[in-house]
Image 1 (tube, one colour):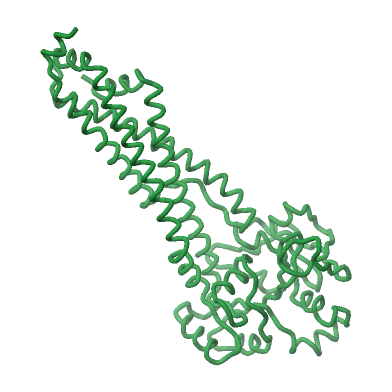
Image 2 (image 1 turned 30 degrees about the horizontal axis):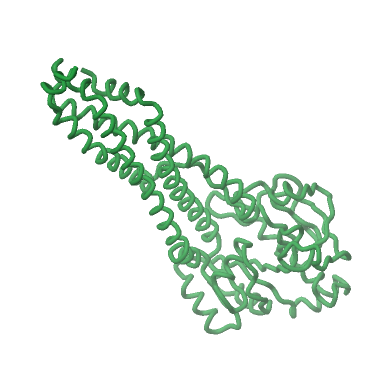
Length: 409
């Protein structure tokens, strides 16, 4: 007697009830799958970017704001710092690379980031976030290299010109720097990083636009005014990640500037804010699954009452009480398993939809639902809940009175 086949046949004798129960399980599983995947993927991507640089320097203020604005281009900068501080710290014996960052303008909501040419050669691990898809890197002021999202959303092509507007909000009332147009000389490959949403240029461009109305001579600016210029932030790579905290304390104690450790700030953000959001959404998901388990229980229990005669015939043909019990448990397993598969598909669709949003908003690519330790544990818990829900109906079937039920035939 093939109990698996019998259980499968019984399920599809009541298609509507079975499908509705599978759907209820799938909704909960889909939510759990999407929450766990998005949480893990976004945290992984944030931490990957956060590990690119050991230290971010900027004006004193909120360290998380400094990291979000300078590394992820997601918040307003904390202010400006004197470039003399940067010039002194980049000569520190523990600093192996230092890149200034100047911001203040945007184009259609995308930040114009002034920096130095050597940042474009920066890579870490197997990632090259500034790799070119076409063109070349900037070599002179007002030459721009644009991210993949910028090129896609603004339709800027190689050789196109554009002007920046003051501030970080795309507004028709923002001041446009009409006298200082930029020319696109390069387009970055899509990197799945915040760089996809940025426009990079020589930092001199930012200084020229914002110093004394931007009208004085560039050569004079280079030689005479540069020591007095300010920068928004600086990205620092140290000789060893182990000295991040020591270097941070050195800066915060001795300079009119602030040092923040990107990976530390991002981890705190996830623990304090996003960790709680994850718990709330997971609780909702498990609540939906618990309600689904109740649906499984009620559906199977009602099915047992409706097919007493079938069970009595199975017993008369030699099926044991244990086999009857097992057949009902298998029905619960089938419903739960199909609900998990449908939920995985739903979760994948949700992740794909949110991936489009995240790529557009923060430049992060989120993969479809992948089996991780947390997700396997969640699916195992759902299966267990489904099997537990089948125990009462299975026990009811186990207790069937063969003689009485056959007499009713």
